[in-house]
Image (cartoon, rainbow, N blue to C red; front, top):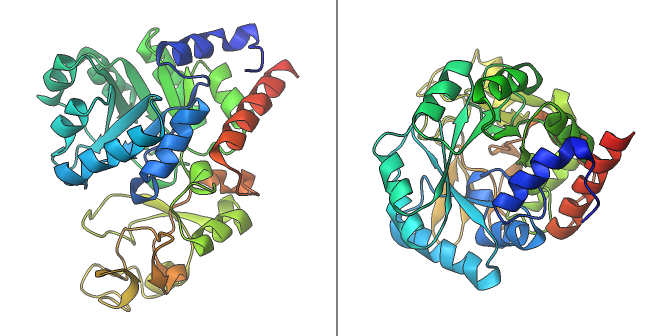
Length: 333
């Protein structure tokens, strides 16, 4: 590991406390974060993340077992509290020792997490939420900025919000998330007091990612202006803002006046099939995976503003080493 400048000592200590080589988290990027990606991140020295909110308990257990066949490195399981965390007990029983929650504050889930001796991280988007999360016993906070891809809990820029959350945390670790695509952005976040950085879009554009090739190539060609924060791809989660790449579905919906469900152009059209029998429709919130075929361009292409810093499809191992070297070099300049 590249020698750590003194200004990054706090981040290095936090990483070591989690058993990581680098203070770098893979954000829970939904169904794109299959076990192969999660295991690659963990094996390379970061914290891999399984997004298990919509995963039934038997499948959640199977995914964790697939990760464990590839690595014994630390991983986290994430749950969106707009929905019941049905697979939380299974994740804990299977040995996941870092649990993160987003889009809400946990209640009875806290005692369950504690009963397994697991760490607890809570994503926040306001100072008040940060204080409530700490009162609940969060071991660390995740500060998400509006630049993030996927479902966006935040309404303010990461760079505006992060110093406020770090101050409110009063020494508790804060993970910065949203809009970071290279090591210089990571360095900026750590220099602002964050103890780690969580990247999502950057990991979608890796060899181990389950994203469809067209989706990955769209990320390589995009810049921040090609993303939009919208309510278009609502799927089974209406009124939850999300940042995506602009595409034909979004453009046609906006041209029609952004009508509500039931009145949208092309609604009900099947866009893609994932063998043997899964079908995906226009306005679904599922991003395209490599196994799908159909009108991939018209599907939900989650992307943060960090896409402007993404220009290649490296392996996860190469990416983590590069991010950290860039981070250190940026701090030393």
